[in-house]
Image (cartoon, rainbow, N blue to C red; front, top):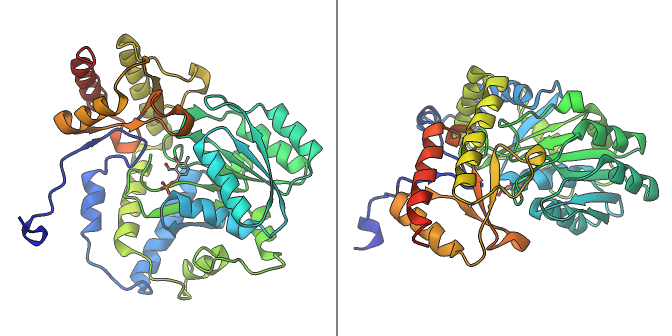
Length: 374
Ligand SMILES: Cc1ncc(COP(=O)(O)O)c(C=O)c1O
């Protein structure tokens, strides 16, 4: 049949991979709301609502809080392209794929990047970060709170931020797989720039990525010697668009803004604490189940993310073949390992609307059926 004659009809997948997560019906319905113009006062009021809702989920009073157009990588670039100037010394803490991506973005922006690394699957010791800051004066430190490639939760962010500030550096924290799923306390921890993405624990479609900037970081951006090299991601220009009266910057997507607003209202209705506890409870259900199937979680309990679990595969298991069967026979998406963990782990996401007991049981049932045959 010619493409033009085929209905749009993707399979009804259960999204239990590293993102995107399932989108609740209320969010999908919000996307069908009629469009208004990107400078319409009604739309600017929606952007103002979004700022208020984003401050709640980031647990911050930061004035400069908005969502950039684009996926999480756009927020990564926005954080660094605004803060960094060529030659700036940067310390990139790398313990997985996304920490490495931050280092690469900084390198491409002409920063002088030093890497602090621990093996994938481990977290950073605050002392090691402190020592590195002492040995190499640094302007900006990049760190991933929830490393989606390994399933590790970086603890002690408050102590890391304090060490950065003691040494005159600012902390950029990637919260893509934590925002809305586990505590992200931007003000209490004194983080300078934190960002997330709509499609993970917030359960909106990808395409908008929240970012929040501390007054300290905003001051640094305002004091730049050179213009921000990306006009599209220039946070001070975006700030002028997100405020009333708006100054045109780009044509923002109304549908994605409607969706993110509804997703954040759902977060607010559930309450942050209740939401974090739900993520913990369902992750514990999953961990008990995968242990029983001889797929033990790779990350030790104190560092294990509730939102993304890496399970260790027995050697010789047909990783790709089994994931294909899960998708084809059960409509379940989970993720394979990335980079050095390719073929060694599966990545199971229980984020936002995907984090539900019935989803855990469906996945465990499907695994129980296909695993013995493998
Ligand atoms: C921790 C982390 N940071 C950044 C990103 C990049 O986000 P995106 O794929 O939405 O561009 C991801 C995506 O999975 C991520 O998990």
